Length: 319
Image (tube, rainbow, N blue to C red; front, top):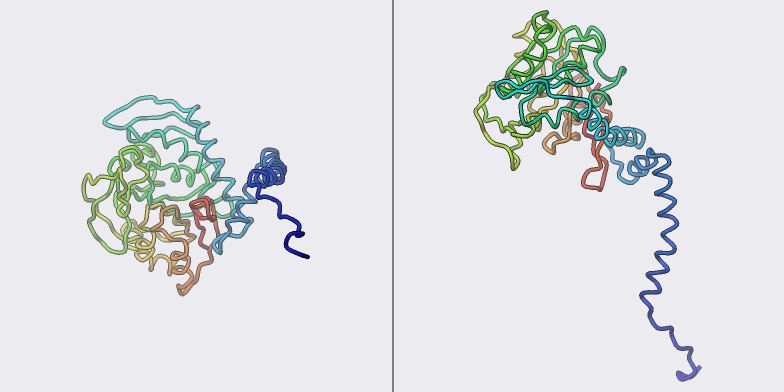
């Protein structure tokens, strides 16, 4: 065909193609939105498939994401039902649906969320968490919301390990009767791979975030605090065994596990670790515990959608 007789090409119409794309995609978007609104777990299922990693199965990620999303709502509701009863020496006493708690003033806004984490069983359910009669180490006990949960589940003894002085004072007030009865022991130290004295970075508006590792923009050094090993604490307090170790120690989990070698080898306790901080890399912890003489297997707990790219466990269970 001569060039003059060729069929002319249609002019480019970017607006047309844009509208066509919108018309094509809009129904799908509407159906997905309606599906998520009608049955919210569909959203967690979709996110878990899109962002799944080798750390969590899709089923674990779906359940973990759902719990994490629900925690904010539950925390807000607990906050609404709580009230401040009194203040004293930089501490405030709050009456909550899950008991009365002293907290450092200025950090009370996180109390609802912390209690929601216990209500939603972030650190294990009846099968994976604390069992009746067990001896428990709570590393990073803060003001004791997990201590209270462990006692409710029938723990024989809980050693509450907490380095921040204001949190330690809250622990002693919150569990005065249990301490007198010997069911709770407060250890005012940090856990590490050796005896040491290090600066503790404190956060004025969230004492649960205090850390030896993470400084952050709001972190400040108030004083230096002693650290020791879990193995030495077990000997010091004459513990006949250790059944369960919970760690929420803001980047120090790997160091603390190094200092628990004898305890782990002798008693092989269940270990639950908060891995929300980058320094508590769940792959590193999994590799370390899997390489012991009595290897541990790992499973994913509560999850977040890390940087909107992939599922990341905030809690890991090691058995």
